[in-house]
Length: 278
Image 1 (cartoon, rainbow, N blue to C red):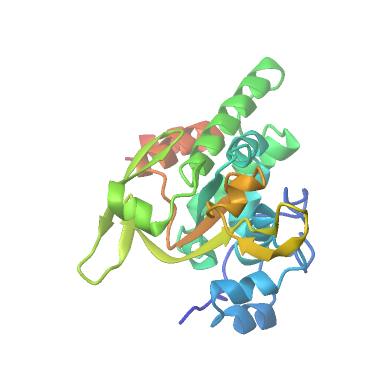
Image 2: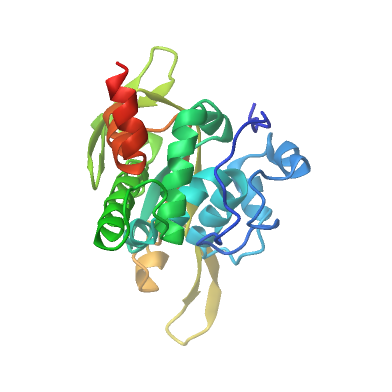
């Protein structure tokens, strides 16, 4: 049974910038999807989710990203702050996979880590100093380092290839631009990536309509081909379309050490006081 978290808690601010995707059915300034939308889609299959978006059947990426925008707004806030990482993912001609932490995963981070992400996003998007010390060159350097750290956090959740659950099980590893993450499957079939549970997965396939004709040019009918489809897909020059996969996870995949580095970078004065008290 698919469920969507409505647990109240601190949220990452998204008021000062727009989502990088086509706008979902609600304002991008809203951080949680409407309750009615969540409940109506909670028991839907992937094919039913496809039907809920007003895109032609060939736009698998648009569907996937619209679904991300609607269902994982706080993760989209991180993506919005790292456009270069997002662009690298979208450049893949075969598709991509995204590990999207649920809303409850962000709630579980606690105030301190949510505060770090808030400050890092504000610094990257707004260019503010935010606690990084003096201005001028120091602030510019600090902002650049913060952007690099935040991009690293994001890129632990992005793969420039359509890594389905079957592929991850077969290889036992997920390779991102910042390193490899182990994949484990428990006896009950539950999958873990870098120790974080995969709750559910959605696959959005590129589809095309192929028309077959005889030697005289008379139509023999049409066939709908999915990504990597036989015959018609290649004949049409597509060679298979994009497959975009969204894996919902119940935590962030980046290592704990990255949080310590981010704490030292985003709040250096507070970090010094913190270390001194230890």
